[in-house]
Image 1 (spheres, rainbow, N blue to C red):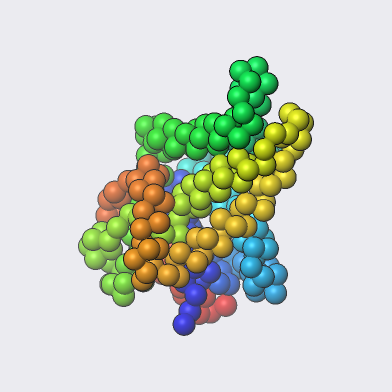
Image 2: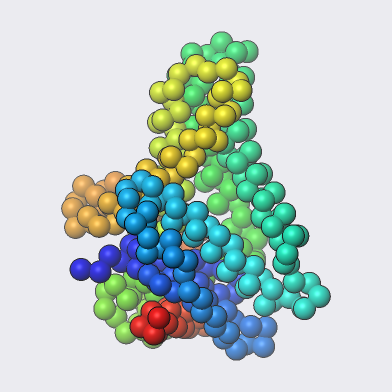
Length: 291
């Protein structure tokens, strides 16, 4: 049986959707003139290597590559919407992405760790309670961020394309026709969503960092950064396992928080958005057959 977790994934981009297969990925984007522009690229050899089959390690490798692939797709879609003189590329692009990554690490991992350390040393909290507070702050920051950015009109449109991506993959996995009318009937939730991965990562970090106990501030901060790849690998395997065992009532129960959180990062798409997502999916499928 084909492993759908590896075979088909996707991502919402600016006025478009990127779909990834085993060997290729395809982007479909709504251009300013209303037409749909598509782009196909071959995936790196890492997806077919032995490393991509080793549990825990494969999650880290594929997630890192997917992050780069996703940033590349977002950049291409943003550049399509701007004039030639406003394109972001080269050193400016890499500097922007690097700074964004560092800021995210600082806000979601280092800042909560610093707050936990302060409560432990100035309010004299037990180390376990301060670590637990740190994890709760991190989780609330993630949820608050997802909720807050959804009010921006441009982000709301990206979230609608996110919903179109989920509906398209859900429709395919159910064997439905790939038409906007048929795809629209399916859910905006999907168990393999990146939102689900982020929630899983935050919950895992809450439990793991809580049991680490007291640490000096420097080691506390270092541990939060160093453990991110390891926890990401565990989160990937958890999502992989749950996605492959949704027939079990217990699994359907434990994935409910992941599915519920997706309502913060998805919106109901219109037919034009569904048309773009379907085009991306069909373009990717055709490229897979020809690769």
